[in-house]
Amino acid sequence: MSTAVLEKLLASADQLRLDAAEAERLGMLNTNTAATVRDAGTIKMLQPIRFGGRESTPREFAETVMGLAAMDPAAGWVAGVVGVHPWQLGFADPRVQQEVWGDDDDTWMASPYAPQGLAVPIDGGYRLTGRWQFSSGTDFCRWVILGAMLATQDNAVAQPPTMLHVILPRSDYEIVDDSWNVMGLRGTGSKDIRVENAFVPDYRVMNGDHVLNGQAQLDAGCTETLYRLPWSHVFPLGITSAVIGIAEGALSAHLDYQRSRCDSMGAAVREDPNLLFAIGEA
Image (cartoon, rainbow, N blue to C red):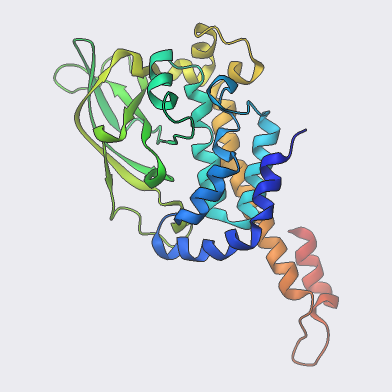
C-alpha cells in the first residue's frame, strides 16, 4: 500500500501543528496549510488518474486523513470532506469534468450535500436558489456540489421528492463570511453558501438518490472498483477518518504531556493507576 501522500504530510508535521493555532484564530485554514495539503496530493487521492489523480484505495485515503487530522484537526477534516468530491466528479458528465479540471487538475470543490435549496426545471437546466450551512474548506474551493430538492414552477418540492446534486462554479454562489463562529474546529472554515436564481445546465446536475445508492456510477459506465462504490460508503469515510484521527492526536498529545509530569508530592504521574486506567480506556 502506498503511503507517499501521508509521508509528505508527516514531513511537515511541526509546521502543520504550528499553523493549526492560527487557523483557529482565522476561522479557516491558513494559506501555508492549504498549500501543504495540496502539494502532498491529499485532495487528489480519489481523483481519476486521467485528470492527474492517484485513484488511491479507500483505505489509503482514510489512513492519510487520519494521520493529517492527528497533526491538525481542521486540516484533516477539510481533507476528509473536500477529498471525496473528486471521487464523485470522477463519474459525473465529462463536460463538467473538463470544466473543473481541464485547466487545473488541482482545483478543489466544496459542498454541502444537505438539500437546502430548490432546483426548478427550466429550458436547458435548472434555476437554483437556497442557502447551505457547513461548507468546509470553502475559501480554497473554486467549485461546489450542493444538495437540492427538485421543485415545481411555484417553488414547492416536487412529488415524489427527488434529491439532486448540483455543481456550480465560484461565480454562481456567495460565501457568507460571517457565518462560521463556533468553539471547535474553527479552522475548517465551514461557512454558509448562498445562491440566488443561478442557472445550472442539465449536465451539471446529478440525481442524488442514484449517487447515494451507486446507480449513477453504473449508469456512467464505471469499471474501476473505486468508482463503483456508492456515495453512502465513501463520503462517511472522510468524516469518520477525520474524527478518529482527531481523537488519536488528542490521546498522543495527552501522553506526551503526562510522560514527564509529577504531582504535587513529586511522584511521577505516569505511575498513577487511575491515570493509566483512563489512558487504557481511551
